[in-house]
Length: 223
Image (tube, rainbow, N blue to C red):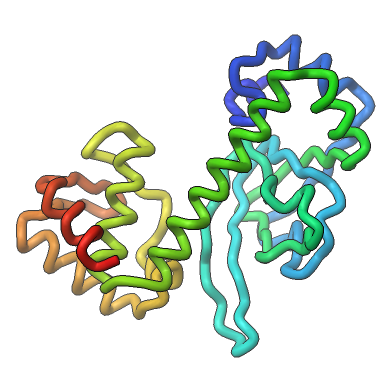
């Protein structure tokens, strides 16, 4: 559990503090690639800490269409924003990408953890606030704007996360197409157009933002 010091929930906490908060009484759950960890509509009864591996979140519409939402890599927390919600139904399917290890913590146990450690409480509040901000941006990206503005917004957000204009993205083109609600050929064509226009350069999953000001204008003016 040493890698939990890199989890936002335990920000500015030492491994000794984390071990003291969590204790030794919790059992972990292991999942194989392709296993469904949580299904859309499940009641979220345990706060799930992602200790090892990577999970993919996707949402299925009543029409049967599946939309990729995001990938979460360990260490992290699954669906923290809905844990204390009145309607705490999981809004997505959470699937193991590779081998995954999860530490589930009940609400009663987590209540005690929050009450006993002010750092943990502050980190949790910050985490769900950031999550709400992320979801707001995600809704705006999915519902409004052109394909070009959606790509611009995604690249600007990823650049900000990496604090660099040069970065690798974690999504495939198909995942991005699903995320933006467009076809893969339309996505590929738009990316090529943006490269030809001198806005960005790209080699496989590596991107470089060349004209950040123009990307920001495209994203702003189309939303």
